[in-house]
Length: 429
Image (cartoon, rainbow, N blue to C red; front, side):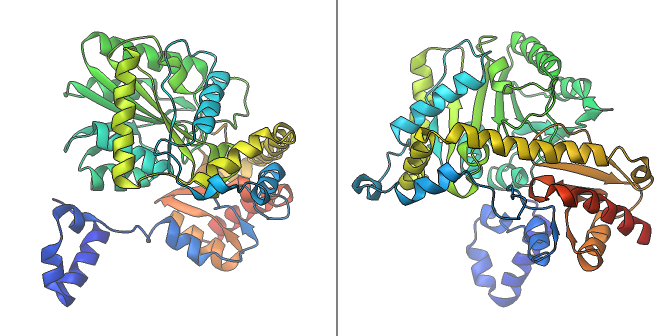
């Protein structure tokens, strides 16, 4: 097995200090490492900076965590005697029923049978369950070239699968030709896709037209007797700001089209309801097959949960149900949406200034908390360091020439200052 540089570094320490421990490790154990050289290290370096454009949560205008009041109120009265017992391995039935209804409500294009959402403990846990169910060693997972770094840890390291990417953008649009070519070039009879919209880290969501084109591409492939697994990472579903952006999940458009296409929706309350710390996620299956077959998939999922973490957090699930019953909840969600949308619109307005284009341009973005910029000939890590040390500003470098910016944590009045600082740092460098 080939190890990453960070894993090799850890292995070298063991070989030097206690080689017998290294010999005890499995091949998978030798490949494990914690990626502290990336975002986590950058986060540690930036505590206390006045402009914080890195946090993957939302902050209010006073830089406090932007949670719903109805959520904080539910904390004080959420505990009952039952709260101190275990939750069922599949999660609380009331919450699962609620979330199933939410999926139907938010995705009116759904027409076919829908599995019963199963509660998991975070996105990584949910994706790992799907990987355990469907990925064999050396299987290839197709996804856009912009993706969450943790995918590599999960799929390449944990499951010894391969990630194959295609260019996400064709100009300002989703690269449908690249998507089609990547799929058609797959030699295996089992095609595995991972789609994440709004996309992390660009925060681009496709239009309805683009999703319908993806659907047709997949349908033609399924007609040739290829089995297609579509993992749909809906981690950032909900904050769609533009009229022509599709407001539904890809999951909704893959229903009732072919028995050889299995879409799996992976979503969570934690981001949609500004409750990042609760770690309440769901896996929902849909397939154009018998309900008994969906039940089998759910039973296998429960086995993985039971053998892995036993069960999920009961108190978090109870707190969420109390929040949903709070009459203030809908209006507070609307207020939060409006504030984040105003920051999004301010970023769009600021970036219309042509002077920035001398040093950087933005990738297409139309949704959620973040956006990313590509630097023109400058090293992103160098610019990040200059911003950190001389401009009291905190951003994340994700590629050699790409900075990720979380406008979700930047007050409106600081957004122009943020981009001016990046401009000045590039000019200085």
